Amino acid sequence: MHTNSPLRVLGITGSLRAASFNTALLSAAAELLPPEMTLEIIDLADLPMFNVDTEKPFPESVAQFREKIAIADAVLISTPEYNTSISGVLKNALEWASRAPQPPFTNKPVAIMGASTGVFGTARAQIVLRQVLTHIGALVLPKPEVMVPKAQEAFDEDGKLVNETTRGFLRDLLIALAAWTRRVKE
Ligand SMILES: Cc1cc2nc3c(=O)[nH]c(=O)nc-3n(C[C@H](O)[C@H](O)[C@H](O)COP(=O)(O)O)c2cc1C
Image 1 (cartoon, rainbow, N blue to C red):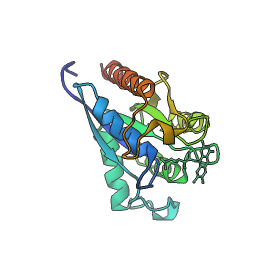
Image 2: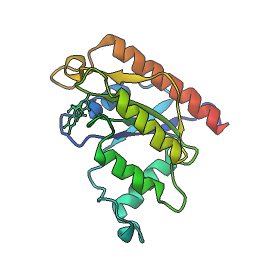
Image 3: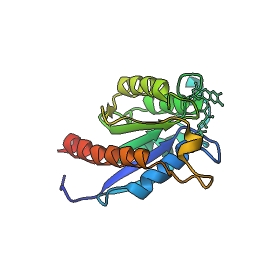
């Protein structure tokens, strides 16, 4: 791969909430994106509940979701923490992705991050997310970790990430993801 070609990143939010802090964290990533990257942000609202009985043929929304992962150079997932784990919405999407004939996360560079209103900032959800992604073949960026605790204080009322320290961590994560992706591709 040519080192100057732009890296296409697919951003996936694990929350369906209109004012989601995790979707806002992806919007902050779009602002802080290195010039060598592009970012498309999607939510998981269109995916049906996973059911083995309905996977052949894959529903159209699932086929589109898989295709978006497949054509991306890298994926950036922002996960909420629900009851110490990832959201059911996100786990459901990973089930669908894992069952493709050619699972699109195989050898895909992936970075994870998350925002929660609790004090652990999705630390527990990220452990689960890393475990599941690794199981389905993704190459999950080891570090840096971006965990946003007390998200209601890190974002302003318009959903802008205003915590400068967190913005710095996020910038570092994106730079590390670019390097990780180029390393995997070359
Ligand atoms: C069902 C449910 C369970 C939750 N469990 C946790 C939790 O285990 N840890 C935590 O830090 N926050 C927890 N929260 C609070 C979330 O961090 C908070 O709702 C956050 O805004 C969700 O992310 P979002 O803004 O992207 O939707 C929970 C919220 C809900 C609705």
